[in-house]
Amino acid sequence: MKSCDLTGNVLGKLSRLSGMVLAQETGMMWLLTSILGMAVLLGCSGESPSVKNEEPQELRVGSDAIEFTPPSPETIPGSRLGEQIRLGYEIVVNTQEYAKSYVGNRLNCTNCHLDAGLNPNAASFVGLASVYPEYRARNARMNTLADRVNECFERSLNGRALPPDSSKLQAVVAYITWLSHGVPQGATLPWRGLQRIGSPRPPDPVNGKALFANKCAFCHGSDGQGTMAAPPVWGPQSYNIAAGMARVTVAAAFIKSNMPRGWGWSLSDSDAYDVAAYVNSQPRPDFPGKANDWPKGGKPADAPY
Image 1: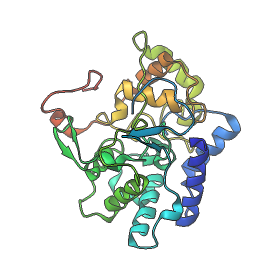
Image 2: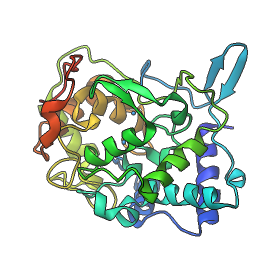
Image 3: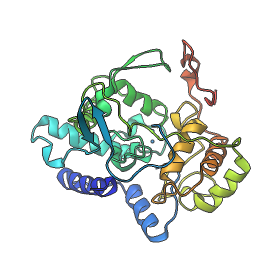
């Protein structure tokens, strides 16, 4: 089964189990792109060559091969844990509704982690729980999965961390852990994050501006402030300067494999870099704690601060 078919199947079943539908913005995004074939630039990550096969990818651990296959919604237990998993799904898809007090902009988790974290081209959650705890150079310490979730709330959502004992934080962790069922602890995930690309020339934000107007503005607005179809990509309601997407290499990788929405891989590597350079040259919220990042070195060359 192709990963796009699998994603649609799992999302549909999970929505029926939870008794909820996707948020209006997400639904509108899919409707517009289906009818008009227009682009969404930011739907929130990973690494490899610039073209990805649509067939399920495999992770080899010893002599075993594990396909990129999210668990079936029928495996969600009819217990408190099952309620947590369903709540976690809703928080990821409808963050503005289910975790509004912790969000400081107009983004939902699924704007970057497309299809509720089920899309292997867009920072998928599948298998992610198996890699944590993990050392991260940005804060120079071991991080739990809950730490990583809160990092996204503080940076990508320009909000604040959820308390350690928060039922919402526990729900998101439960959802990601459920999506990681069957993936061995410490496994290397070929689909993790975003497929990094390179540009044969320096990024050209002037060309990026023209590309944005032609391919992205219909959904994100000519001023980048978002519409009913897609979120803001700069300005006070977008991700802040310390978010991963604020790095041109990260944004370019996301754009290349996912944008225009439904037309991923249609831009050249250079064009993806140009759009990323233009978008990230625009104003966005600051992050007060940025001075504490990379205390032991290892700061990426394209970090914007």
